[in-house]
Amino acid sequence: MRLITFKAKENDAVPAVGLLSPDGSHAALLSSCGVVYRDMNGLIEKITGEEMDILREKSKDPSLYTIPMEDVILMSPIPYPMQDVICLGLNYTEHAMEAAAYAKDSFVSKDRYPVYFSKRVNYAPGSGEAIPSHEGLVERLDYESELAVIIGKDAYGVDPSDVEEYIFGYTVLNDVSARVLQTRHTQWYFGKSLDGFTPMGPCITTKDEIAFPPKLAITSHVNGELRQNSTTDMLIFGIDRIISELSRGMTLKAGTIISTGTPKGVGMGFDPPKFLKKGDVVTCSIEKIGDLVNPIA
Image (cartoon, rainbow, N blue to C red; front, side):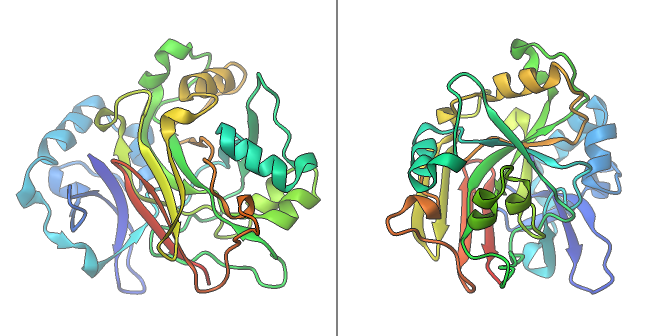
């Protein structure tokens, strides 16, 4: 099933958690299934196995979906993450190569160890919301289509063979990057964490819908032009390694978002580079999850 956060178009509307129909045209309130949670963070943290079974069964009923999507505003499934998003850098071989060609000293990977960094997220835009260009601060704005994993229960000391048990679901994340800021500073935090730089959506697809480890088509388009085109099984360090390694020394709380890296085809990888500008529209897509579409403002 696909879980969403959405709201009515009135200015003072309160966001609600719901289900997205298989064709993406209609929504259903979670409360119509007899399951009530105020937001997605609370759902992920508190939902019971029995409630999940109820939602899975009811989500199969086409008559449940009575709310046309054109009548509501689709938000990020987790508009306000509880913590910074954990990210993987240089986790597809060909992207690591294009990054090194752009700025070798700033994009250095080690053969046996993942590159981890984080993104500060005050608010995560949803599909349809604008990514701010931050004129005057950002000179080279770039996109990165990524598969994000949402942790479903507190994870500490997890064996690689048990990782799937701790996953709640998956979403699409655009790891928007200010390349000059990113390469100017020793750490990537500032250039990755500007307001609006972590769009997510359109939904969370629960783990039961996707075989583990995920082997899904992942793409990005800018103004309709195909830029990235790969599959998520091309990760250098897989999800089992990532979650097991991180949980050896830190507790990954329920609701933690881990973005697994991007394939080749980002703007800085072209010759000459193809950075984003105001008016562009970026579409990041992953099979079985959907399209995350954001204009640059």
